[in-house]
Amino acid sequence: MLKVKFKPVQFSDLELLRQWRNSPRISNNMYNNDFISQQQQEGWFESLQHDECKIYFVCLLDDKAVGTLYFTDIKESSCEWGCYLGGESLIPGLGLILEAAALEYAFNYLKIKTLNADVLTFNTPAKKMHKLFKYNELGIEDTEIIRGNEILQVCKYNYCEINWLSNKEQVFKSLPKKLVTSIRNIKFIKE
Amino acid sequence: MTISKKILELISEVAETTECELVSPINDDTVLFETGLDSLGFAILVARLEEELDLDPFAESDDAVYPTTFGEFVNIYKKMM
Image (tube, rainbow over all chains, first blue to last red; front, side):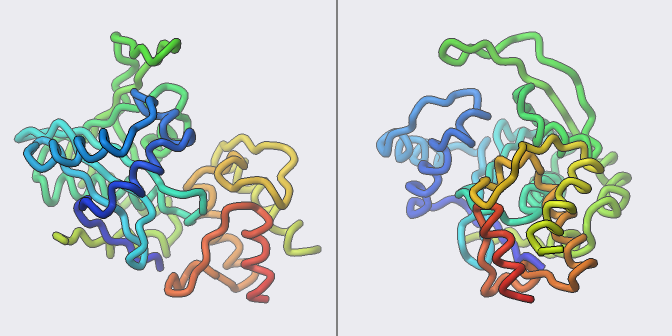
């Protein structure tokens, strides 16, 4: 069983997160793929300290940072989420653990009613994962994103708490049993 | 059949059931993230390998080493056999 924990991002995590975020594999799937400098990263972290609409976690596997999970645009009844896996090593099933962790944290800790997710249309793995977890696909957003010389389109998804409660066990049945055990043992820690 | 061939065979099988498009060829230097198999695919692959070989090198993560390439993935299984 993979023992996965999530802890809030701390100053000491910034350089690792910046390296991950700047890697082409990750930045290509973001709205903005500009290189992030150390100064920009520290500025972002500083602003995060005063922003109650955003929460960023580091995903830990046996105390080793392996990815990040974040919630933005947090309101009373909704928020948006995203994640990425760090490094180049494969941890089988970690993407699915992050997907489940987002739903569990949103509904059990943030107590919101609707979780939103935006995915760039070419990000097929993320779209497949949302389909597997039975997200509600809302379609392609009218407004396009301009990124350098590219015009990007965004596919919008949401998940209502009531639907997750009804779909959860069915989704888990479609996953390998050991992975489900890991998901059921996910921990969110304060430090 | 070598373990490498067995894993490749299962990767193809899993890719078909999870509707993943694999790159060709997959060799020892192929980066796992670039094989075309997704997170669900790898989770199923590891579960299938456990059924077939009675081995799950990722089950106890205390000393687990996580692979980057297909060759490293195969070696993890080889070492446990």
